Length: 173
Image 1 (cartoon, rainbow, N blue to C red):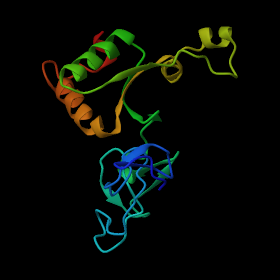
Image 2 (tube, helix red, strand yellow; image 1 turned 180 degrees about the vertical axis):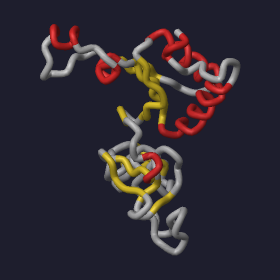
Image 3 (cartoon, rainbow, N blue to C red; image 1 turned 45 degrees about the vertical axis):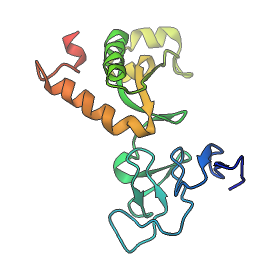
Image 4 (cartoon, rainbow, N blue to C red; image 1 turned 90 degrees about the horizontal axis):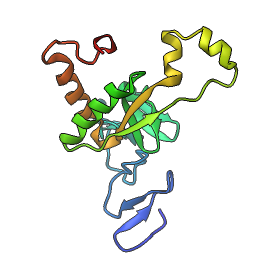
């Protein structure tokens, strides 16, 4: 790791600044020590630290997905600029409300809106084929920093199960 200043290094994998005493990079999951062992296979050296849950895993339990190390449980997360998607909906107001709740809980949500049409469809084709599958092209996503994913998902789950038990469903709006 190249040294930036006395307290930080630049990660060789992702080029973020990382504390000099860090055992791994919180942005990509790269390991800087020989002493981390797999969370599930205690005698096996870890190959990376999941950027979502922060646990070390071997190559059987996790792997590199688009330049970030993730455990098998968190490999499916959509990642954009060091943040993970914890919620997506075509209802922008609904996503905005949930982001505000996360913010009042001390988290740092970011609303990412994807309103671009797919390259292979004309506007008329999009207009005539809008359905559940097409909603992903017009979704508003709630993104949170890697270290906040678990807390954000618990808050969203608590909202879902409170009151009506189905508050996160777009059908309620």
